[in-house]
Length: 155
Image 1 (tube, rainbow, N blue to C red):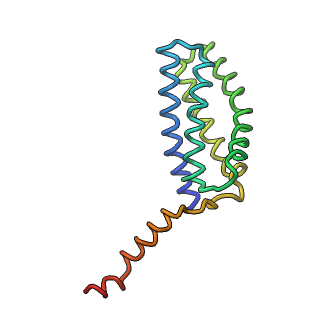
Image 2: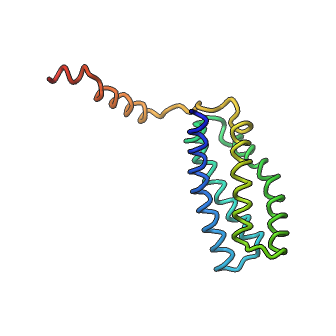
Image 3: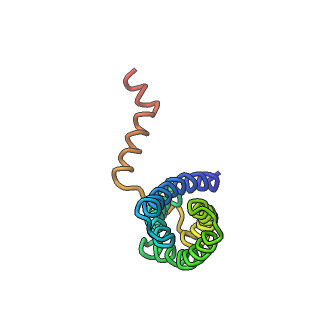
């Protein structure tokens, strides 16, 4: 069940990152008329930062050293970005619509990045994020409010 919930969270955050990527890509490509690779790389970086931040905190709940985790994600993109830029350019030259090329790259990215983050970036570091003092206090208050003993005291 835990893995299923991770996939659901990762999917939802990836969709939000995808909206950011498609939105900024469309702006850069169709409004500003940037070349494909500049529009693609810029929108990719924006979506990666968004996705990394949300997934680290909510999906994998990891306290792993943030610069190290981001470095590992950077290594993933060091391989993924040139490959996706290469196949994106090749597909564009072949006449495939830019937005379809980007959508294809995003699907490949979604599957491979989840596996990479789960088994490389956050391996042995999942669920290590300690709750803040505010979250601990809120949890304690909610337990007290839900307890039967409180009901008995005021009944």
